[in-house]
Picture (tube, rainbow, N blue to C red):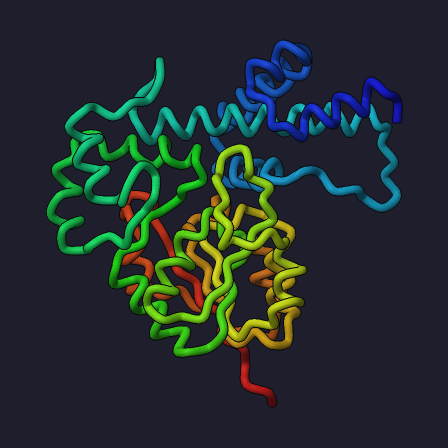
Length: 307
């Protein structure tokens, strides 16, 4: 690999913003815009879903298909550009704001802060009755999730959800993988759950990792802790780590808090390929993940009985 290419690869690993990518690679930007415009014009929902899944993770090497280092570099540039562009479109669609920065008004911001956070961006278990009373009154509620997702917050946990998860775990050892700032594990620990929070710290530019979140990738954590129960909240779409849950002999139950839309969260290839667990989507638990506009889903994987 040439020095120039190596420097470009290292730069891409810093997650540059879209403007920087466009300035550095204007020809690739034109190609991305042309491809996306053509896809949108075809109005094929399945094609768009497949495209989102494809760009959600770096391209893997394919046997018998040799590509130059330069080609692989430019493919990664286009992938990152596409992700930024899709995020912009999702932000506009979900907030109704098409120009300028997305902001919360003073009143909406104050009420949301008191309802959902203990302080700053430290989440708290949300009282469900209070949420159902107050949330519909927030006129700018559609803007909340796009704002907090930049800090690694993809959902809020109601008090009833945390308590029901604790009952589901039922005294067994629990491991949270891709735990982010460890919010869910701390809530579960307060309910008496023996839980360890782990993360590979790959989002260190957006998430402040506290000391009680161990820096361990999922594969290492599963091997080291041999948990009975594993939980993961909003695993990235098409990720490369959930498959290790299903091959860990100690695991009896895997709980995934994510989206009902396959292209949004989870390694669905691993979900459907594994044979050792039964998969169900718990509608009652799903309704306890907040806010409701995000279409949350709680998937439960129970290990099959032998024989």
